[in-house]
Amino acid sequence: MQDIADLAHVSRQAVSMWRKRPRVKGRDVPFPRAVEVMDGVEHFDRDDVVAWLEETGRGNNAEVRYDAPAVAMPEGMKLEDLVVLLCVYAVAGEQLDGASRDQLLAWAQDVDPQDEFVLHEVRTLHPGPDALRYVDDLVEASYGPADALARLDNGRLKRQAAERGLTDDVIKILQVSAQACRTYLGTDETVLMHGGDRVLTLALAGDFGAVVLQGDNVRDRALRRRAAIADVGITSTVTGPSIVAASIVRLAADDALDRVDGIVLGLGPQDVAIILGSAAALCDRLRDESERMRSQTLRGENLAMAVRLPRGLWRAAHRQSLGLWVLHGGNFTQRPRIADLAAVPDGTLDLDDLASDIVGALERTDHRAFRYCRRGDLSSILAGAPVVPRGARALRIGQSDGASHVERIHAATLTTSTPLAGHDILVEQAPGAVLLRHRSLGELRDSGHIVMRRGSRVDTGHADPEGTVTVASADGNWDSVRLDPFDAERHYPRATRTEPGDVVFIEKPRPRARVDTEGGAMVASPSRILRLREAAEIGPYALAAIINEMTSEGSEWETWSVPVLSRPQAQRLDDALRDSQLYRDELRRRVDATRDLTRALIEGVAAGAVTLDAAPTTTGITTNQRKAG
Image (cartoon, rainbow, N blue to C red):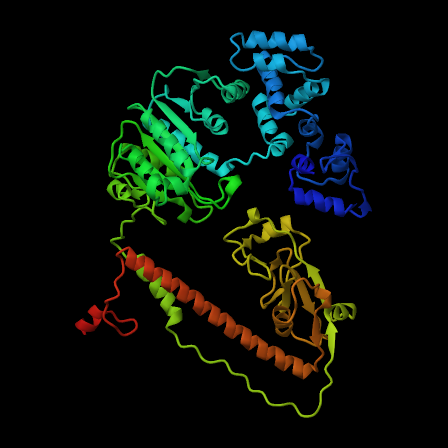
């Protein structure tokens, strides 16, 4: 099922839903049957799946037939065996389909005469014709051997191995860090030293002329094979500056710190190391032997920068924060730069600014501004303090001109300082007994008292800040979106516009509704419109209030019931609820203004741009004007 999801470029949950709902565009198209079940996992025929996806049009991949051969892996093959065959294909430049074992061995001897990465493996490998054909199909369906390797490393065999590594986000952070270190070293002769993590080394290798690899064990040979496929140069000698990239996230704290100490001792004066590990080992406060080991490593004063990273960057422990160290073999400082990127709001981390901070930390300069980092104190760290305190961030220089802060405060107090009248409604007990009657919205629709109109799916790329067509939704998420009227007609010619008094509502995740008093708005799906006719026994504000306050989650709009009232009673109820809604809107506006005032005060005082010891004045008259009068 996951292979089908990968082929269709959707989630596995989407494929499960397709299987349960075979009806597509008004007709039944049954999901393909599994041809085999192995170890509780269903296997499907590739051609059946491709034909079904093409017939139904489901998924987000228009090239399923072209990509399918790369997804349908042969059974009984190990991931590394396929990598060996792919390496022979990539380096020898020969198609494997139909090749004999002797031909494979001859090609391996030609490309690896010293038996450094593939010859021994080919000698012990006995691939079947399906495996050879699969490698050819895989390369044909890929953008070259490197892309074919990426598909293998993210396919079914990798999932079966249950390897849960680093996310793409942390890989990008490490790539930016390596580029920044290379920029600081300032030479094209800088090489990347393999730090033990194959995935990390290959992810960073593209920015370097060569990768230094001096071992010859099984893992080193596997790295050489992948480097050959990706056309990454491998060398065993170092002639210039080097950058060591190492991941210690899988090691216990003491083992991780011991590994870091070994890396630091091996750094030359022009070498830089990038260490990725758990924040518990690299950033947080430690005790006893672990604290002693970390302090011993840091006494060399090689730490240029320490960063706490956000959670969720390691798939094997998504709730655990990671830490990043940048060390320089010839850079001795008592004031390393530190930053807690976990305190940066989601989606706002600027990798270019982070790279600039890393370069500044390596240069040990104070003649520039830092976006995320501030200076730490090595003596405090050696005394047992955390390397990166929670929430550590760059210092900000207070604005000498506090006009913007003052204006924000004044704008908020224009709302909060005005008195708010109370909201009261006069009622009395109704005489006599009343027979309570209710009708569902479904009944009102069938009788023609209300009309439901669906919203339209709106592309935010069509938004125009200067547009005059508003986009409405029941939850208010589209309130800031405007469309140019010509664009609205061109892109959404069939969209229904609201009329004054329409109720815009939504069913899920919980029922919500609001009244559009102006009309002319386009309604964004999944919100819909309820339009009341003259004969309806209820007003729009009453209907919206009932939807907001008296309906249950998961219910359908046709089942919502409203009371049947006389026209005068319905009008009086609607007027009262309209006043209540206006009062609620005013309260919300004041709460928002108070929130803005709170933030403006904190930021203004903290920036040194605002003071709270000002003398009270008459509204609109400053203290200087009063003295002059």
